[in-house]
Length: 125
Ligand SMILES: N[C@@H](CCC(=O)N[C@@H](CS)C(=O)NCC(=O)O)C(=O)O
Image (cartoon, rainbow, N blue to C red; front, side, top):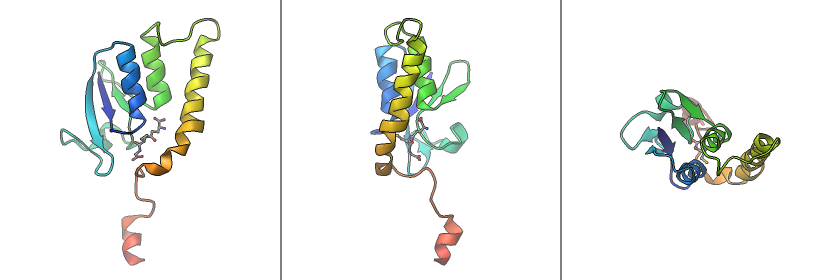
């Protein structure tokens, strides 16, 4: 498994959860400004959404979105998955709250996925 991450980004949550679940994984840093991986690959080909995290499973399938990746990790570990009939929904409740209500307040400090104005248009302004 490979976690694509960036220092100081929300991929830290997946990094912590993988360690808490004691799962073995490789990590590849992504430069969010150049959109290249530390090993020189074009990140757009790995995750066309352009942001981290992305998580490559051993099957070769790619998972994106923190809610999905963190849910997958929780499913691998009894320690992380809440129990009981509402356990799965409590997990989704917490992940949705963090992802939508808390994470959005950190977004302005991160570089945008793509320039807000197309480059050609910017040159004319
Ligand atoms: N919807 C995504 C958002 C991920 C996200 O916003 N990642 C930020 C880091 S915390 C990022 O990569 N920003 C750089 C960019 O958008 O190019 C998720 O919840 O996983």
